[in-house]
Image (cartoon, rainbow, N blue to C red; front, side, top):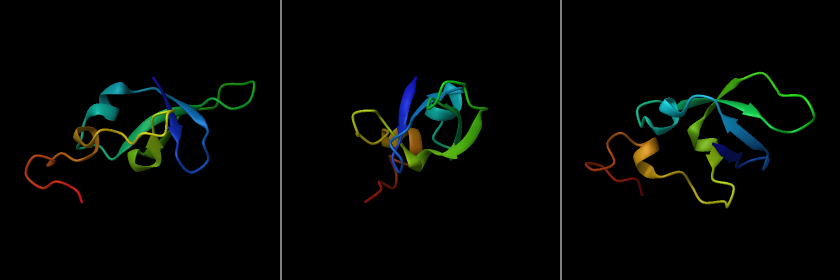
Amino acid sequence: MFLKEARTGDLVDVVDMSSLVNPFYSQVTVQYQSGEDLADPVKINKQQLSFPSGEDLPECWTNGFYRQYPQK
């Protein structure tokens, strides 16, 4: 799945989907897609990611307690 790093706008390919959708993991392993060669996988915070359209990730992917304590 391709996402966008919000700060730079670079596309990243999510290597580990289970860490992306698990709300209790704050980091996810990705590979940057800029340049001709594939970059080495790196871990980045989920808060730095968004969908390519600019939409934020769903709260159920980032906050394990979203039903009890919604973010404001």
